[in-house]
Length: 172
Figure 1 (cartoon, rainbow, N blue to C red):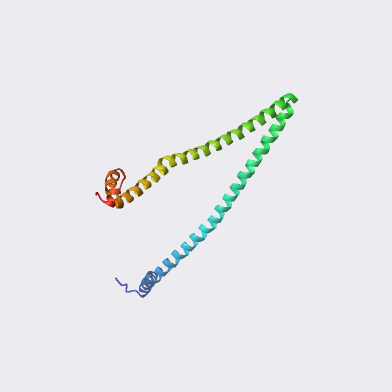
Figure 2: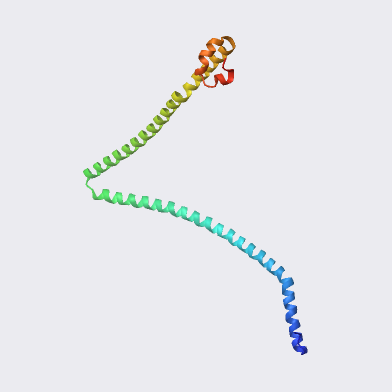
């Protein structure tokens, strides 16, 4: 109901005007705000990507530095251990260390040789079970082709034993 008091009617008109204005122009504000929020989210994601990449690089550098520090610590412990040993013990330690390095190198060489030998074995198996039968098949198919056009009686004897020969050249 519309109020009869002019002050109340003015207030009511003002609130209606605001609601109509908000309903008409507020949609534009909502769309604009959505675009602003999307742009802000994209900007934040880009900033985070840079931070993530930086953190990844820092982690890689820290890992390298940690490995170097561990190697240095192991070397200093080894030096301290060697200083505590007698000359005979040091000599035995060095010989054992050299023997262990030789054994490791020998094991790696044997593994590489075993891998190469396995590859050669697979090639031989492939040649035996695939290559040679294909060559024999093509030779027999060639012979059946020659017999199909020259000597039909020999063709009739050979053709049943060569796959697809009778399909290509016929039964007789």
